[in-house]
Structures are given as C-alpha cells and as structure tokens.
Amino acid sequence: MWPNISEAPFLLTGFPGLQEAHHWISIPFFAVYVCILLGNGALLYLIKDDQSLHKPMYYFLAMLAGTDIMVTLTTMPTVMGVLWVNHREISHAGCFLQAYFIHSLSVVESGILLAMAYDCFIAIRNPLRYASILSNTQVVKLGVGIFLRGFVLIIPLIVRLFSFSYCHSHILSHAFCLHQDVMKLACADITFNKLYPVILICLTTFLDFLIILFSYILILKTVLGIASGEERAKALNTCISHISSVLIFFGTGIGLSLIHRLGRNIPEVAHIIVSYVYFLFPPFMNPIIYSIKTKQIQYGLIRLFSKHRLRS
Image (cartoon, rainbow, N blue to C red):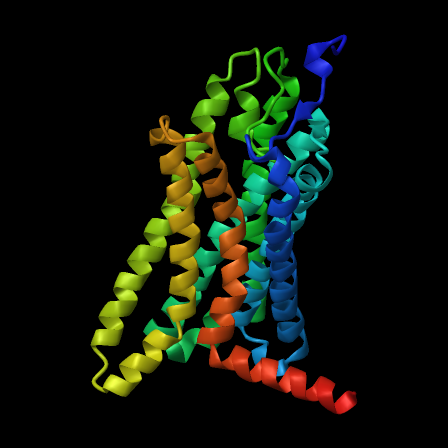
C-alpha cells in the first residue's frame, strides 16, 4: 500500500484477460511499430535527398511523416514495456507529458492534413499562382503555425492535471496515458477538463474536417469543368493520396469517439483495440498510400535504391 495514494504512480493496462498472451501480442505490435518508423523514416530521407521532391506538397508530406514518427515514439515505450515485461507503473509527470504529446500531435496531424488540402486546392484551382502563393516561406509559416496550434492549445488541459489530487484507483485503461482517462481518476472539479476538449475539438479537428470537405467540393467543381477526361483524371490523381489519408485519420478518430460515447455495453477489449487502431493505423498506412499512389514518390524510391545498389 502506498503511503500517499495521490502520489502513487499510475498503472497502465494492456489487454485485460489476455495477460498470459502479452508476449505473443507484442510480436505484431512491435512489427507494426518498426514498419511505421521505417516507412515514415524512408519518406523523410527520400524527400530530403531527392531534389525533385523539394516542393510544397512533399514538404507537407514530410511534416506528416515526422508527426507520425513522433506519435509512434511517444506511445511505443510504454506499450512495449507493458506487453514485453509487464512494466505498468508510470509517474504522474511522465504520464501527463505523454498525454500532452499524444493529444498535441493529434491536433498537429489534423492541421497538416488541412494544409495538404489547401495545397491541392491551390494546385487545381489556381495553378498559375501556385508557386507564388505557396512559396518556401509560406510553407514554413504554415508549418510553424500548425505545430504551435497543436502544442499550445493542449497546455491548459495538462497544467490542470498537475493541480489535481488523485485519490481514486490509479489504474488507467490503456498502455499509454490519455487526458480523458487520467481526469476520471481525479478527486476534484473536472468541469473545465470536460468542456475545454469539446470546444477544442470543435475549433480544431472538426473545423479542419469541414474546411477540407468544402475545399474538395470546390476542387471537384473545378475538375468537372475541365473538358478533357484525361486532364480530369490527372487532376484528381494529384489528390487521391491525400483523400485516402484524410479518410483514414478522421474515420478512425470518429470511430474512437463513437465507441467511447456510445459503446458502454461493448467489451473493454474492443475499446482498447479501437484506440490502438486510431494511433497505429494512420501512421502505418500513410507511407504505403503515398508510395503506391504518388508516382513521384515511386520514381524517387527507384532512384534511391538504384543509387545505393550502384554504390554497393
């Protein structure tokens, strides 16, 4: 028994009822984590190394890949610690810091997808002014604004967590820390921590999705006005990778929100699985989508492999 329960570390949770199988469960998890790091790392290296990819579209893709790597590195240590060696304890400060990065990076990724939609919008609606509108300076400003928005807006929630006393059970529902999971354990008035996230989601993720949707309505209207069927297909193909990433990111996010709010009678394991899908599936799929659907990435990978083969 801890002498002061409010100072006791939080306890992370793996898969309830499947503790004996954690070592086996860790194998696919570790494989997915490695694939995410290798896939997104390869994209970053390719965009840095290939001069033909030094364009706004690929700069935003590099931001997306970097964000996916950061999300992976944020959750991987505690998830693999629980599954590999059953290391469940995490300090308050460590837990709050992990929650801060998880939620901040989620807002950042939403912002990057919005910037990529803006890139597609300008490329199709106003191609003659594309280079002047999305100059390198503008891309840097957008990138800084996206990251500042994500990392600044989450601060009030995390600061509040530090001020709470935790006298309830210290057992969390996942193998990583989430704000909504931690605040339920507080013995304090958590009204702000309940209301602020709702407002935040409406003004960031939900608003981002609506703007992306509206931008694609305008893009579709422009594409349908193009006389040549071949040109229409070419115009749409430039955005198909981004559309796929948007559907995966917001689709898994909506699924996670629905199961948390409407799935009280759904087994706890299902809640846990959906949360892992939300955090692992988009970073896993993004490099695959862009490698398959984007010819410039395909050509870049071929050139990269050819270069290394010649050196060896």
